[in-house]
Length: 286
Image (cartoon, rainbow, N blue to C red; front, side):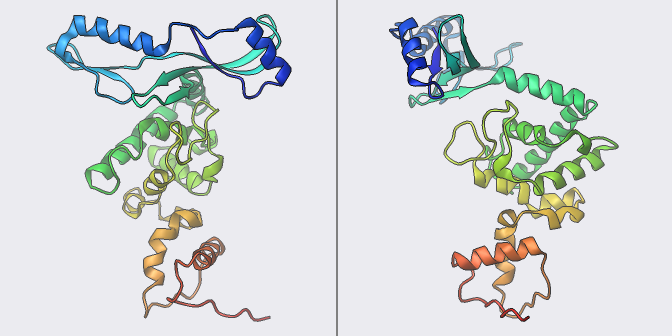
């Protein structure tokens, strides 16, 4: 049993695939889930929690620790197919949520890429990831961001994108450089650690929601706590927007000068009516 994606194939290649696999497997992932739940219930009874949207959960009991059980099937994203001897595909896994949504992910590629990146950074990556996760936990505890808005998986993917020369020297230096590089990067171009899915997108199960990413990266209290004021000028205009609007709407405040990228942000805000009625642009002079 495996699931597949043929979107990248030509009509001839799809015909060849259907010739090799004319019918889908009769035993499906949903059937497998039913059988697994039946077996686990017999073994663990009320310690099995099936209420999760994605995974089953075994509760801790005595010396046994709690564990999540994610039921998956192989998934092949084909890029070429002429026969079973002549084909190419990217191998991942597929799981089905309780609302019947199919989600494809690539854990093998994620693990291999993170391991390679950890080695390329002279083993600085993993401790840096832990630091960023601790910062996330502090933000949640202080009520700065919502629980679940910055999953560990996406924090790992975020740091996977940072060039290896930004790591090293000291933890403070590494966090400063990583944060500065990320604040100056195009968030839309970042990838998850598997190197396949985009890191930041809305309405995609395998990507970080845009607002969640913005909230994590733009919190001023977090920036101050890490003493990285020198990187504030590198924040892209779309991340700084919500912090500047309140200031720009104050009637008696005067802004004498702004960096170019901030000016660009203001122009966009004005164009979309976010600042309309609160101020005006001065006329350009030659």
